[in-house]
Image 1 (cartoon, rainbow, N blue to C red):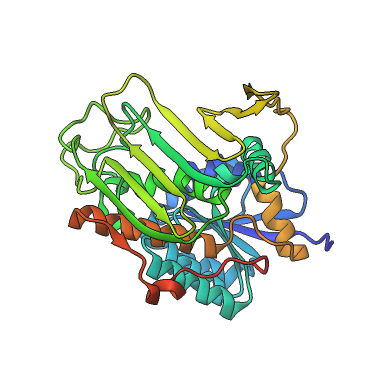
Image 2 (image 1 turned 90 degrees about the vertical axis):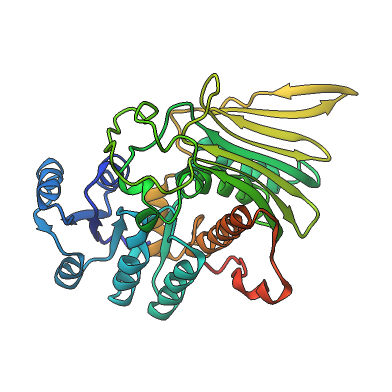
Length: 365
């Protein structure tokens, strides 16, 4: 493997850029933190000082054209993901883009087109694929221990978890949608990824905006503006029919009158089932004519897969990505159809002529 250091920059100086990207890339020996960019120059300067980054910008185009970067993290509001990623790719820079890849499948496909034209890599920041539990489950399922998978459930429901009324999260022009794009993209993606990303047949569901008037159901640390825009859904519930005959139920909410928050994926197969509920992994099967529940013990001190090391290794060695841009297109296509179904109050089908709209998945990513 090539041992040279990759020149790295981050675009967006918010909490996600700091907690996730900078805190991880700084620990990789083959990465050099070169530059940071944010339209709020003070935020960029604050993180630059904290992480010993020498070069600070308020314009991402200037940073990319000046710094001769190998990769960038795109940690901006959703509506900027496609614009920035495409620009970086066409300038020869690999992109680690936070989820969702774009605000819709059309923009996501444009990112894939730019990636293919430039011959560079794009990885979507789907961090839930990289937990020890998910890595173990993927191998367990791929080995056939569940038999034929016929149903899955996925959800992330919060009691008080609105990311601040009037922030970009609650503005459709900035986010592209509400809780479905914010939380749904995590656990719906995880369920479908574990199932092998089967081809969808139809989507149906409903979207609700029941808490747009409140200022008391914000997520901890998110203040928001009581007079700010809130024109997206705070709850999304739906059902996906897959062309292989399997089905998926999902539910996502920023705020709901429930006892406690819950994050989960459950997958049912003919030989067994698995559940990952609030981080607790269980396998459900039958041994010696008796139903059994197994709790795998995964060593938390051993990281089975590191998202950031994985991306840099892929850039340097060419190994396939676990979360390539094509997967972002697949998920956004389903989310687009969900919004259509919720708006029409009827199922939306993936017609035969749509077959090419979901890019074929292969090991060549």
